[in-house]
Image 1 (cartoon, one colour):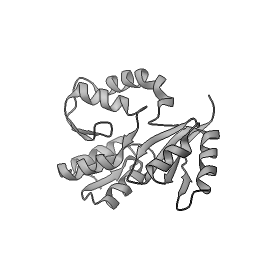
Image 2 (cartoon, rainbow, N blue to C red; image 1 turned 45 degrees about the vertical axis):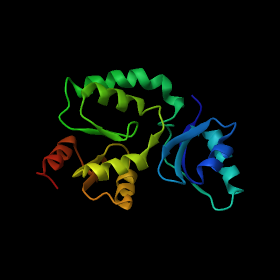
Image 3 (cartoon, one colour; image 1 turned 120 degrees about the vertical axis):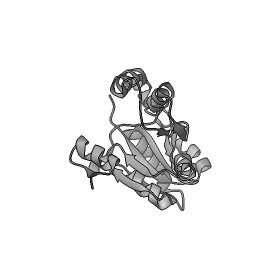
Length: 184
């Protein structure tokens, strides 16, 4: 496995497609009109950042992530992930899920499993997801994964609800208590 990672970039979509040409890197997350996260091989990300330095008005920041999530580079992980996720979900889910793949609320277990599985190797539109959160008047947002960048982006986008990152808690029980409204 070649070293890989992710980089946050600010550049127009048309220009980004130009600078990605010939690289083993692709858009992983669309965060706005000119904000993206790109995942790919480390060597391609190095070249991407080098190319962007010559484009006025652009910026990039390497993320502390070593997996090119939400890119086709993880396509071989789709079925094992679907299987593991299905086993963890059990026969039903009591909570609706907002999928970045579909950018809408899902309550059907099979649709949840499909959408959440595809997220591992499919580009996400976080902006569309945030718009759906606002439209649905979500009252609770829990970020699962490292850090709290998505929560910060949601608040910046105007989402107003109880919001925390899994990383804020010391245990799964504490997360559950918070979700039930019995914990801090």
